[in-house]
Length: 453
Image (cartoon, rainbow, N blue to C red; front, top):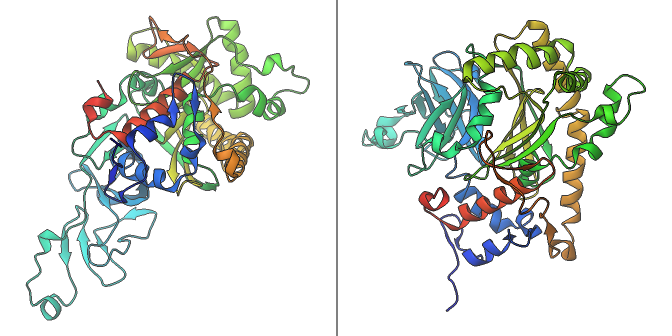
C-alpha cells in the first residue's frame, strides 16, 4: 500500500510522504539530498512544522526595557511584535490586523500605548486586545464583539538569561526541555556574570541568496571550513609575518551533537596558560586587547564561580540552537537566520556583551564585529560567498540530483565525562547529521514525545 502524502495545513496533501522526506537524510550512509535546500514544498512544510512549532528566539529583553516598548521581528515568515507589558511581562503578538490582514505596526521598534492599523484604523492595546474600531456604530451597528478579534498571541513565551523565546505550539515542551544539552553551552555565552548581558550597536540586517540551513548547519557543526575559508582574513588581522600555525586555535578541539533537538556546537579548549595566550593573540587581532583579556580572564573567572565547575574557556567556538539561532562566544555575535523562501536568508545580527564588561572592551567588540561578522565583515563575506555559490550550483538539474557527503567523523562520537551531548573531534559532521535528522523528524511527526524520547 502506498504511503499517503503528508497532510499540511498550508498545502493540503503535498507530494512528499514521510518516507520520502526521511530518505532525504541518510545517517547510515552519511549523505543528504540537496533538494532539502531548493524544494518549495519542503520549505512550506518547514514554515508550518518547524517554524510553526519550535521555540524561536525573538529578542533580547534589553531591547524592550520599559512598559510599552516593542520590537518587530519574525517567527519564520510570520511578522510578530515582542511587547513589554505594564506588569513588565512579555507578550509576543502576530503583527497582523484582524480586519484585512494589514501589518499592524510598521516600525522596527519603539514605545506604544496602542497599535493602530494604518489601513482602516482598528486599534489594539499593547496586550493585543482590540479596543477601538472606527465607525463601529455606523458600520457594525454595535454588533461587533471586539473581544473575539484581538491580535493573535503565541502559545508560550519564556526568557533564558535575557533572550526571549516564543512558540506557536501549545503542545511544545518547556524551553528547558527543548534546549536539553545545549543549555550548558548557551550558559557559557550568556551567564558569565550575574549582571547579565546587553545588546550594543543595534541590529544589523542583510540578505544572503542561500537557504537558511546552510548557515544553521555551519554554525552548529562546521569547523572544517575555517582553516581554509578564513585563513587569509585571520592572517591579515595578525601581526605581519605571523605563520599559519600561529593563526590556528590551540588546545583540544571538540564537536558536540546534542542528544535531542538538532542543536550543535564546536570549540577548542586550551589546557595550558601558554596555549591560552596564543589563542588570546588571535582574538586580539579580531576584537582588540581589552575585549580579549576580559573574555579570557574576568569573564572566565566569573563563569567558574557561578557554575562551580571547571571553567569552559572556549576558543574559536560556534553554536546553533535549532532551527535558526546561532552565536559565536568571544566574538560575541548572535544572529537569527530569518528564512525568506528556499533560496534566501535575511540575517539579523547583534553584538551581545556582559553589562559588567569595561566600556573599552564593549567598544572593541562593537567595532570588531563590524570588521568580522557583519554585512561587510571579512569572515561574513567568506561564509556568504560559499553559501551563495552552492545555492547557485543547485539551480542545475543534475546538481539537485547529486547526493552530498555528511560522513565526517561518523561512528567516533560518544558521551563525554564532562561535556554534555555526543562528543567527537572538532573536525566532524556529527552535529550536522543531528541537525538534518531532527529536521526530517519535525517534518514527519506531530508528536513532541517522539522527538524527545
